Length: 111
Length: 113
Image 1 (tube, rainbow over the protein chains, first blue to last red):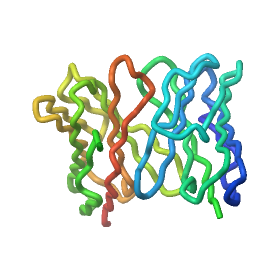
Image 2: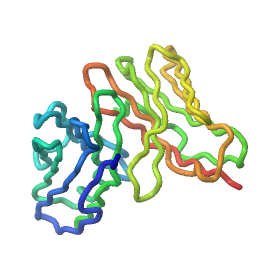
Image 3: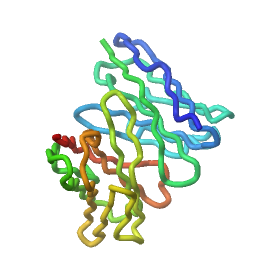
Image 4: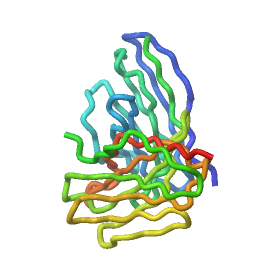
């Protein structure tokens, strides 16, 4: 079974731009969560989607948003990028248990 | 407010010996705990988990111990192998808040040949 895939793997943007990241969960998984990893803050929860509905949200500004499609694929959008948004963005999918399986991440660099 | 803490940023052990990674939590509502391993430029890989109704869970070379009264869990790797060298993250979850893992900041384990 294929794992969680994320595209693109690397991205360079400039301040003020917006970016969209994509995540395809493991087949059959309906829950998709997004995390931000930075050296200073570690892994922080952004939001979680299930059946196209956002069920949980972390403490991030409204510039961070997401959505989930009927095939469970998910996208995450960050508008008006700031230097501090440079991070590794990780997507994880779950079936019905509490175990989340992570993708390889998208490395976003904001210049 | 860091609810999951891994107080050792790094740990170095010899191949064949035991590696013990520790994790403390403050939120008594957490009832499910997981360990992930992460290599550079890759996503975290699930290793092992434990529910709060247990105090030990074993899977091959990996054993997780949970001490609820102390709000402490540990991951034991025996025997340690050079391929185990990675960053290990402890994560916790709360019933009714599924799929919202709270992570520690990780411990870099180096296993020397």
